[in-house]
Image (tube, rainbow over all chains, first blue to last red; front, side, top):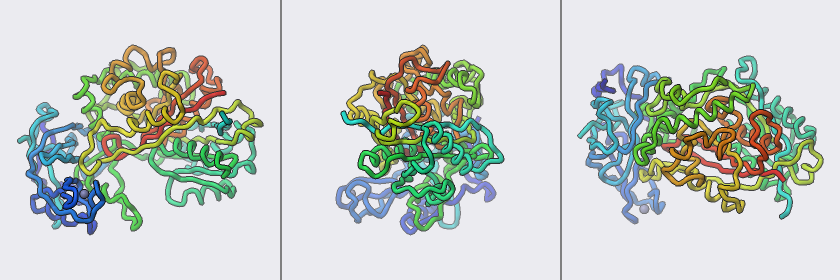
Length: 144
Length: 386
Ligand SMILES: [Zn+2]
């Protein structure tokens, strides 16, 4: 069985667009354009996801965008077989994943284009992108 | 040691389905129940704790027609009411109140709230600080799956099995059999849990808590007030609070809030895990209990699977938990923390009949509020009889 193989969703199957704030606008725009944006603090050098206007480690205000390579490793996953979210009802079963990026930060996403039976913690993944509106997008992961 | 504030009233609403009730009506009936249990009157109440919508305290005090001089509405999810009990105890020790009512009511079941499988609400409040929910919305995150991420990781790192997780559900169901009010009372086996419908693998239906209507109330009072109450006081010995969250992308899934609040609670009270006679652990899912037991130090990290096997958690076992049947079998209207303290109080009074832990002196309550794989709170509280 294949979970959510329909990466290039037709318009009717668009993922819900995230709520955009002034602080996250550039992040979602980058995702729309096929790039995963992390942030890196100019003062302490720590990398963060999600990006925010102040560094989450030293609380300094000088953070710069840093774009992820898109390479990562599957840290954990769950196969969701039931949801009351209308945007996802038609997608079950789909795979929620916690992904460790090669850049040293982790994030929640979905694994797509992968047979459920092949899912394995530690498997290598690569990012793919999907637009969710005219100025937002989502990052998903496929087997590398 | 100076006498500590105590739980003097504890009452759990028997309803599991109340389509004709409102949450505040259930709360009001629960307040009445706790008041009667304590042998107090409305005029004795000079403090209130409530978790809910903003300004909820204003509405609850109006409904009960009380004008307390101290209140708290700490809102950290299902663990909140344990925080309230400790905050109330501190306030009483500081002379800010004498008798604090902590009350709750919910119609989660009648209003068809899909607590575990629904997406988070998109908050558009100009004063809201929960922008980070947006980072989950494109991915169909549901609550059960956030817990499942932790379960899968625990299985991967430690070899924990679904059968071991199922032991937790079996213990809770066994205890529910002794509770006439419990939502589900028929015994289940490990095989039943394994064979139940998958919700968010590796968690199946019987790994997940029930959804019910319900409510309850507790009254925490000063030692002076406690002396004139109907039942023997159950002392609030102390505890600790913690949060865990995404840590800017540096979170390890097994680093749960209980790992911090548990040891801190024991340090604060001078107690140790071997002093505990019973545990009331917020069992939103079986994995929540497994990580809590490890966090509290009842076993080492990774040894939870072996620890729960062989009936450890059942009445008569080494560490009985959730004697009311827990959220897995008894009740779960959304914020279960208060029920942990209610059952613990009755256990320490020694009046729970067939489900009584013999000669129980010390009870540990631990609540988890929020998303175990993401941001959540953990509150640990120890209660004891004189
Ligand atoms: Zn910094």
